[in-house]
Amino acid sequence: MLTGFDVGGTPIAPPFPAAGTPVKHRRAEHPPRRAEPLSLDDVLANRRRGRGAVSNPAGRFEAEERVAEPRDEASAPDPARLATTVTVERPKTVITRNDSPDISFDRSINPYRGCEHGCVYCFARPTHAFVGLSPGLDFETRLFAKEGAAGRLERELAAPNYKPRTIAIGTNTDPYQPIERERKVMRSILEVLERCGHPIGIITKSALVVRDIDLLAPMAAKGLVKVAVSVTTLDPALARIMEPRAPAPRKRLDAIRQLSEAGIPVTVMTAPMIPAVNDHEMEAILQAARQAGAVEAGYVVLRLPAEVRDLFREWLLAHFPDKLRHVMGLVQSMRDGEDYDATWGKRMTGTGPYAWMLGRRFEIAAAKLGFPKVRAKLRTDLFQAPAPHGQQLSLF
Image (cartoon, rainbow, N blue to C red; front, side, top):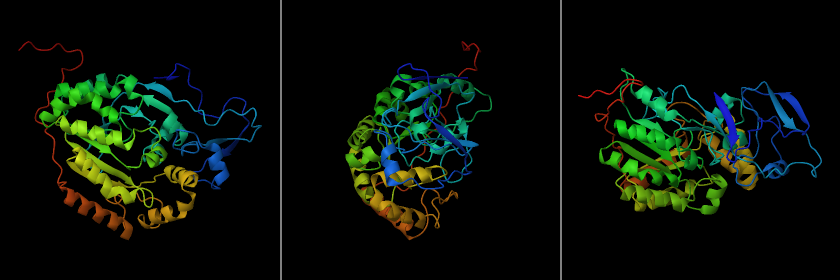
């Protein structure tokens, strides 16, 4: 069941142009691809303050795409004003399983669908097409909160055949994005996992994670938790362009410091590394994070699956028009001439000379700073399943 309202209590509007705006219908492509790339004038005219994506194209599963026709500017709505809306989602299950051979976990939880941080490069954007929304502006403005997820999680952990392994949280969208301050879905999930002694790995680029140190520190003392903080740049101006509603780099480094001082092991993720945009900062980011207390490190190169490829090009055109061809040329040099290669074992690191150089730079910097090659594992032997739903607890 879905119910919708924005952060101010206003009912959600449909994901189409505003009422009264002339529209035309056209068949959507599968997979979607701009028939004609947007011009620089189009990109600048549609850019929203505080948002990452420049446009709002139809998802790849839509049979039609609605495109607003030009209209009198005097009567047109302000394109810069785009409110965040939140829909309550009641999930039937909260633990997502995977069998991907190139990642270290087989299960994950995402408290939210969509992410207000607005990182245009986010590989999770195409997932919004599964709910009939756009991977563009919809992804960062039309969010879903999985309220009641904690109760569902307890039921799944109480299943007789459940076997504990590390649950990764934040692998798709950030569990500590701005709406978590009020919704506290992540907090409720964390409380369940802490009570059960279940191992978890958290991935975030938000300083809000320090709010939960009271839960994370006792878990860390038992070897049950690790936190990975993504730091993509040390330049606050570049951060505002890349991740418009994510905390500034200094706040993320301070979060690493606070977590580390509380005894919580922290991994710094220099991800994604975008050629000719932020990849030159890799060593500086690793050094700053190490000084702040990070004990492990990782990196991932830029990924452009499905609709992200065109959204990223529009972003480059809006912010780095003189670099567009250079950046995309380097990206394609790491993907066998394509914008993206989803092959397991290649999608995170890429191939070719430029990808090889990034990998060697990371290895040398990590070794110089004392980051270990092998990451520590979390314990699973402390897990205690919650009582099955509706069953009275035993007195003995």
